[in-house]
Length: 259
Image (cartoon, rainbow, N blue to C red; front, side, top):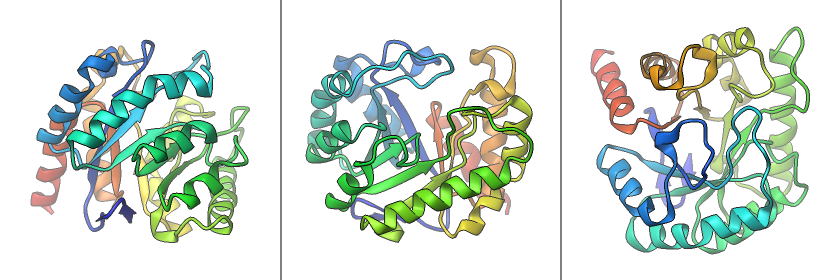
């Protein structure tokens, strides 16, 4: 897969979460504007390969903010990051208006939790900038019964939309959407069988970091997150999107040394 001018393959890489939000579910990921460069520098030193910048919390029960508010939160931090660091930056948004501004400021990828289905202009905006995209499964109502058919069907349709709008195949990555429109049991089933999504023909991103499927308090979920990262390596997942960069990088390194 390509993000900016970098090629990612044959390994499990870390995408570091940097949130420009006051309400993200894991408080340690919240970064004030004046601290964003420190947060990014730390993530890079700890081994992150991509920064995922978010200006809207998508935790369960979140209150949506507008595209204008996302842009307001993103503009200066994104500009500073691109001026200071040579690392690909993904922007987490489902608004094409926000994506267009972010890409004009140097963002290299759009991470869309609605898989190009929420905003009809999103795929076109990404294609025009020759950017990369993470297409995540989501649904307006919780899945019922078998999870695999609706997830795979959604992702196929989104990929078709991406390609029809001109997004290069080697700039597409898929995310099964753990924690979105799925019960705890369904999330665990998806995690255990995650490699099935590779059959769609694209690399995979796994996002489980400190999520509620692990139970307990958010501050106590690092061990389970690391276990899911080990599983990601075993399943040849290309990226894990995480809050705790150092610990996940170390787990990945050890897993490859063991194999």
